[in-house]
Image (cartoon, rainbow, N blue to C red; front, top):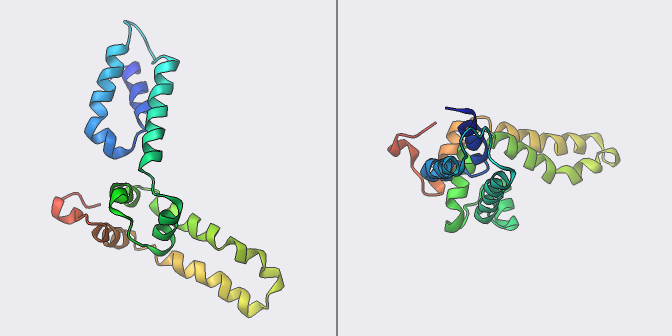
Length: 161
């Protein structure tokens, strides 16, 4: 793989993994066809077009804020149109970090009042998010459970992680 192709594959990471798996070679092939002989990197215009297209696709597939919040905080099932987004989210390596960060941000208004509360209440407020985060530690079983709830059975497909 030459330098130009490596840079094209790096640009293609702007697209979701599912898109890269199905149409990634077509995208890379188009970029390789646009290359002039001895060109070591895509032009700025081509690079911006690829990144813009990837970001636009990611934003189009993203669920609305209220669906996302219910999904992230309470593990509610997303509408059918966003199931593939949920699958990508659950299979991503940063799933646990996103879950913990969302939970901490959602409870952050409570942290502002810690100085005004009695110590017993402070322990309660602090322990609730920590207990919730510890519940996410068995990552594999939680992911498989969520994937099954959204209609995907990876064990039957042989793609389980």
